[in-house]
Image (cartoon, rainbow over all chains, first blue to last red):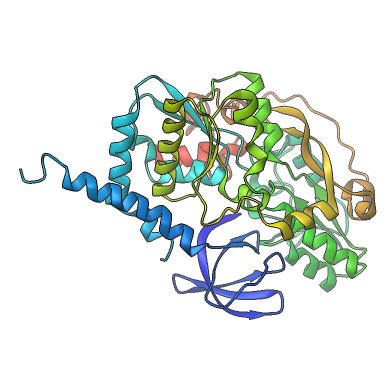
Length: 81
Length: 361
């Protein structure tokens, strides 16, 4: 029932969005969404888009861990061995 | 794939693993996930193998098919046997065993059970088959509820009198509280469901740290998400400040999806519900509001059933309470396989037994 893979919206016609992921096209009912735009990424559940991805939050959560990962690599005592 | 590959980045996963190892004090902790998507992802990505020995991940009642009680399946089978009825359902439900077999075992004609990806397809079926009765099996948590509510609203708008649902939707918070009160297993932290929270917002878990002092972290479904969630739970335990944290901010807003919540509120009201393995829990289900009762299959058809004694050695109930592992079951992999499931946890890919069967060998 649950597709956790975000799909990119290609076209919106009324309550239907045509979205794509990995080369496959899906349709989703967007009656539960506000202000959806072509180019947004949506999470679809039981045929309905339930949320659009917040790109800024996605980036922020990754940035925190990227910094930690870089710090760990820099300070790895075995890195030159 | 965008928003997937970055969250499967090996060097980030390794750095979180290092942080957990450095900061975990080693005393045994049990973290429970209550979403079938997490159960599947934890097994698929081998998350258990990345953790120190004493961090124990246990599966709770998060698979919608698994928590559906036998009596519900029995009612669906009884409906399927009625002349003129077409059962419309999510695919996983077809193989779930009831007291007298599954829907698949009781298929009457080639077209009396139809699998839908969306409940809206059952609306279309009702329009295309005016001389048949379409009954949608309304199961799932807060995630499927708005889609099902939207379908009922649509059926009402179109005055479709050959459409109904068999209400079986469940809601998560009261079940989580029941698990905490049952004390079958000590729960030191909840990996809270991502998409349930997308709908509801983050507030539904507030009572857990407040009343039970148990940390909660809402998690996404990729390995970086789940590892970061476990790190946040460890951190909360270390600081002794249990709270609700949102690791899955890219998809979960504090207030949730208000439009979806309004759809649920319009169509459904809270009710008690019977959960397979947990029994009856008040305030943990959704029933149709009086305005929409004409769409309730319980009212429309005579589907009273007798409760039969359950003699199966299946331990799905204990597995869903986190009290036992799939590998503790005498039927696991012998009698019970995804092809011949004895219990619901082996049917759905989100069930703990199916996830163990496929990935934990």
